[in-house]
Length: 423
Ligand code: FCB
Figure 1 (cartoon, rainbow, N blue to C red):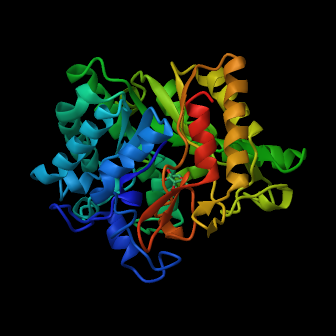
Figure 2: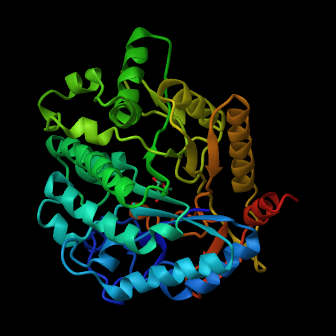
Figure 3: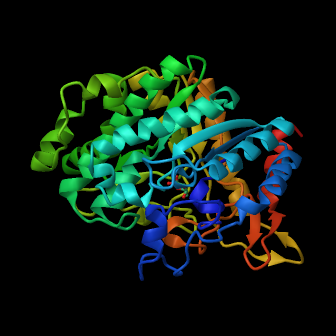
């Protein structure tokens, strides 16, 4: 199962944690649908031992979580916060005690606000700060990790955070968005280079949201648009990582919005990595007239309005293997939001159960076709703070009653648990 720090931890002002861009963003009126924040979230900071025990009871053997950078380094470049590191140390102890492997993500979007004040991901300096943070985390915890991920979904940081402005830091400037997309990639490469030296055994990767794009019709205009949209979401990240170049068609389309890229950058970004983490939720359609139009074609949609399309996961994995030959692929997130009802202490969620089962089958199909798929993480262990949707969307295998913080395993969670235990 997978989670992310800002979405579950809460304790936003405790234990010396610094402010993150998501704390600042939530405090701005109108940013979050239900005007909520990550202040309390699932209170995981205090309930961590119980949450880990729950995972163990469910038969979970691999846990993907993230470190809140401002919890361990409040301003992103100054002193380390020992109380923050102590929390993650306790988490690793608990996981180890239950025989659960730890998969750590360094950046799941919650950049320290004070780095944002100095330009955040628009600034090349942030890359150096990120590498020092990565090195410190590896120095303390490297020997205890099954894998380490640099960044989660740089597309989201760049496009939702800096072009559309619907996620933190809420900037709406295409001229900045692609510079921003470059710096997480660059800092990924820099961090991988440094960690290979210090921790040659550590399995290193990056997590990307690679929604496959389908043309809305067979018209040439739609095919061209789909090809370009695929460039923006898949090739813009995979090409520099695996081919050491940005895709020419996207660069041309960007024109003066293309990022400044120093001569050595692409060689740094394309350091060999051990795996690519794929977050898959849905597919998208492209049309020259009405881009990103999913709903018109969809038979089944989730509460996010995302089409349920399991074959897209197989097709995506097969394509990534064919075009890029990564050493290994992991599905680092996959899941669905549906409206859940707590009734007589039970949550019956057949749609989420079907979603899960069908996507795991889609993984199996990919494996049978020769894809080196080495793992699968369900998003998410718990219902949690779903970014701009606040607490209005529930993705958990475990229902969270936010009034009492009670955890109730949903029927999908019971199914998954049986699956994990081979029943
Ligand atoms: C992904 C995020 C994750 C979660 C899911 C629904 O983009 O990585 O934190 O919010 O979407």
